[in-house]
Length: 270
Image (cartoon, rainbow, N blue to C red; front, top):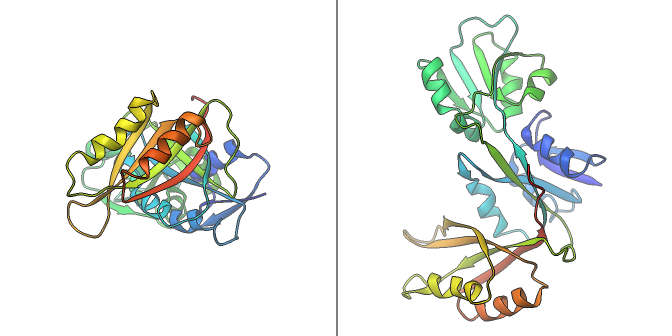
């Protein structure tokens, strides 16, 4: 089993990947979009990518990529995020702080309070930030403690995220939709007619009428014109459940485009 994920080694993605499959061969990619496309391209059997964080919200590039890929979502993993500030053991005054944009966003208050004059630089991943911090004593990285251990850095501060309750949800992309378990979730992407009043209300009403609970909705620009959106929706249930399949049949008549991104077991609570 080859499992694709954001690299290099030492990312939160690696923690999520090992929670999903302990025995998988991990294949690291330079960015999340490449990892998301890798199943379609036949480079891996499954991929795991971050989709949302409880503090910073949705990961936009992955939402966009879900519209393009053919492989379904087959699972999800939720992990707690505990950010650390790390630097070389001989670090001097910290002048530059590096991390993935999500990591920087999760630690805004800490950075502002403790390093108000530091230059902030974005990197492709928290682990990439840690690798770069090896090079200069005035650089520090924000990431997981595994990165500090992997790249021989000293942890200067732990738990620096602005919110104690900080979680990231990852999606697993695979080749075949799993069978219903009775505790499932279905993810959809919906493009509605923007000029028709009540389109979203009518769409969501098909779920309400069948007592199907919606757990998440996000909008994402269609990139066609200003004010035009795709909606990403998660609802409880499996696409093979009769109630859900009836709803999906009705919804096809109420939307311009409807893509079932996947039906999969709900992640264990953390």
